[in-house]
Length: 419
Image 1 (cartoon, rainbow, N blue to C red):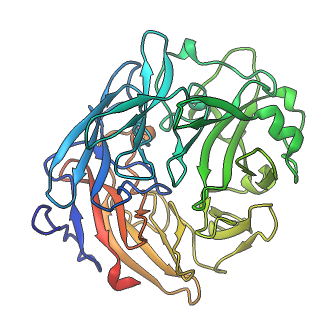
Image 2: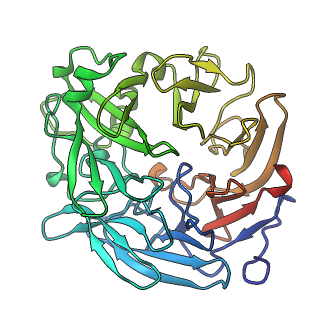
C-alpha cells in the first residue's frame, strides 16, 4: 500500500492508514454494512460525486470508480444518474471481482434499475430491479422502492422528479421490498407492506395504518445470505403530498426493523416503534446472522450499544454505560465493536473531527484508532460526510470516508495489530 498510496498521519493514528483517493476529489464508499473491497481483496469500488456543495438534480450523473490496491490504478467503470449523496449509487460487489452492482435511472421514463458490471472486462447486464444490498454470493439483490425512499429521507436512493414519486396512501399490496435474481436479471415483489403488517410476529404496531403513508427503506442480507432485515418508515397522511419528512417533521416519522427468510417466511418485528421512539439509529447484522446490533436510547438516558435477536427477543445493552454513536459493527471475534461518530454527538471532538472507536465489549476499554475531519462547508445535512467504517471480507481491513484537504476522500486502515 505504501508504494501507491500516501499515509494518513494526522493525530497519530494507532493503526496504519492510507488515503486511496489522493488525486480524485469527491469520493465516498457506500455504507458501514458493505465492504467496498472486492472478494479477492485486490480492488476497491468508490463513487465520485460530480459536486460536493449541493444535492443532485434529476438526471445529473456521477462516476463509479474502481481502484486497484496492488497497482494504484484508479479508473472509471461506469457513469450513472442513479445516486444520492450518502450512499452514492449503492455499489455492491457480488461473489467475485467480476460482479459489481450499482443503480442507474432511465431519464426518459425516470425508472431506476441496477447494472451488473464486470469491471475487469467491461461486460454489463441490466437488471429489472434496483440494488440496496447484494447477497454475499452475488446471486440476489434486495431493495425497497427507490422511487419513494426520499419521501422520508433523501440521500440513500435515487433522484427523480418529485412528481414522479408515487405515494402509498394505504398499506400497499403492490409495493414493498423487491428481490432480483442476478442470473436472469428478473425482479419480483418479495414482501409487500401489507404482507409485513399482516404477517410479522411480533407484529408491527403502526396503529391505524390507514392514517399513514408507509414506505420501505433500508434492506440487508445477513452474512450467511439466508435472512433479511428490512426497514419500514411511516408518517401521518395529509391531503398534499410530502417528501423529505426528516426536514419537514422528523419527529412524526416512525420506524421498525423486520426480519425474514428469503422465501418470505419467519417474519418478525425485531425492533418496533415502541423502542425506536426513544431515539436510536443504524442497525445491522451481527456476524452470526442471528442477532442485530444498533444504537438505542434504551433507558432514555443516552444512546447505548444494544443487541437483539432476529425474532425480537433478548433486547439488551452490550455495555451498561458506554455511549453509542455513529455506525457500529461487531467484529467476528465477538469481543469488539467498531464505530464512528457524528460531529454533533458527545463522542466527537467538537472541532469537526471524529474518532473511529474500538470498544472491547467484555471490559469496556475503548481506543481511538483514528481521528479525522468529517465537517465540510455545505450546511445541508444530506451532504454530510459520514465515515461509515466497513470491514472487508477478511475482517482485517477497514474502509472509511473523511473530508480532508478540502474534499471527500476514502481511506483504508489495517487492523492487524488490534486483532
